[in-house]
Length: 315
Image (cartoon, rainbow, N blue to C red):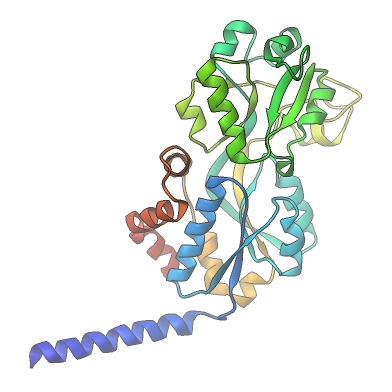
């Protein structure tokens, strides 16, 4: 009889807990999170989506362009973007938040570097590296049959921004910028070149597995400043802007301004969310190198970090 009573109590408690969770959800409308075209962003976003689902919220994933997504965030057609990089997205983020229709929900915990990167074997062919001025003297060492006598720089997908063409012109580098079509194609290019010790300099970012797997360095350009991007008179070239390296700094969360009012509990969870470069690099490595499905990578993180994300929900 005691066992039966205990069972009934457990069922009642479970029902009360479920009812409480359902009551806590301010709206059953789906929170729409944006997905982009690189593994880290997909993992980051799906972890956030999974946590919100655990809290009882309905979520929907929407494929969106990295910069163009701000139009949807302003109108409320999209609700949350989990990765706005200080390196490439801060200008668009500031423009959007200035309208009052988008809010910066703070840092994800990830710290970004996006810059030109070369394998260490290229340093033997261009001894002045990592100083960017070495590229002026040995651009031909980075040439391919398609770009010779100019060097080739493999940029990220065009949608990532980054001002690489402007940087090449402002710093008077004899390089042709060739954009990879996708994140996967970018790192396939690195893998192929590295295996054959072929010339390559390309866009590499952190957090990512590549700098851990391959021996190499980032090019050291003149230090970034906001004025370098906005004022042609600032920097080594008095006539052109973008004559410096890319900015470095946090990866931000951006949301539709109405999210906090419509789903205040969800907003609190999003605000509390933090993850580290080391965690993300390891997860991206599992997906990209080991071939583990991204949903499995996310599920494994959720299982291993239950106490952590439960505390974010409880705040």
